[in-house]
Image 1 (cartoon, rainbow, N blue to C red):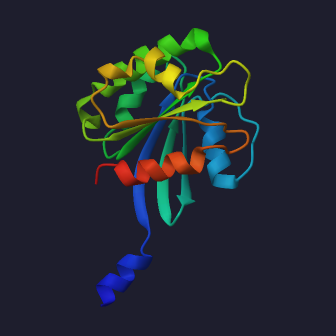
Image 2: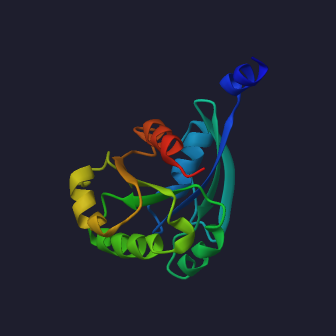
Length: 174
């Protein structure tokens, strides 16, 4: 009885690595989920690490800078991760192809083979942003072997974020 009761009220802990090109909105998403507000950010040169809680689930999130010089360092943070959040600026059509190239290369890393992949098409509130179906095609996700979800979100108004992270919590490797 005690084991069942404690399991009912226990908090699940999930290690997440959040990546994507620079200016996609990774840090804005992180602090929207952490603080419930939009904060002014500067480009992440290193790493932000925060704990966020959604529906009795603690996510330990490592937010990595997305500049091209920093991307080769991402692989050093993959060990121990249970899920990947890849953020794409869905309003910047000129960089979606580059995002797809970076994403597909990342997904080939052996340390990520069992991880769930949450692809957030951020900035859906900006006119001209591509929808989930278009983003799936433009990123060429048919080449990705991981279990994934593409979700259109808006970091500035917290639209779609909670639902996306709930999916991730239900699909991460344990």
